Length: 150
Figure 1 (tube, helix red, strand yellow):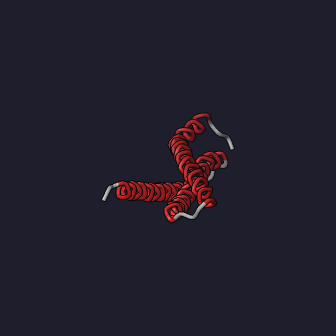
Figure 2: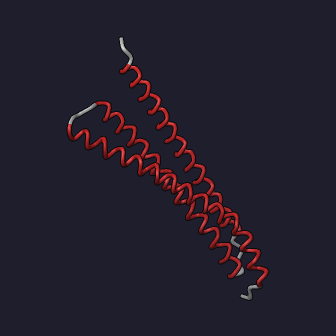
């Protein structure tokens, strides 16, 4: 198990792309967590208002917020799984070289799994954004109708 300095340098070069991907996943997680925090804050406000008096508008908005939070939670789970797979890819790059074992298929499989999770993550985020935008437009339209004199 004699590791040459050039071998370590080559492994580090191979690990750079997954590490950049990991950085992107972490940034994406921050976005998702911020969106979830805003959803939770708005839900708490509406639930407090509902404690005072029942309102169909608040209930409808809460339903939308619950759907959005579910989508964000799935996106967070997928992004986290993606990050885990990328970390495993980097670890296997070093372990495979240190143990002088070929782990190409395992590394490729984990990288593909990471990409599938990342694609799913973006899909759920996009769906959540569409729901938020649709609700915002519908809410604005309803407020316009309510304020328009007959």
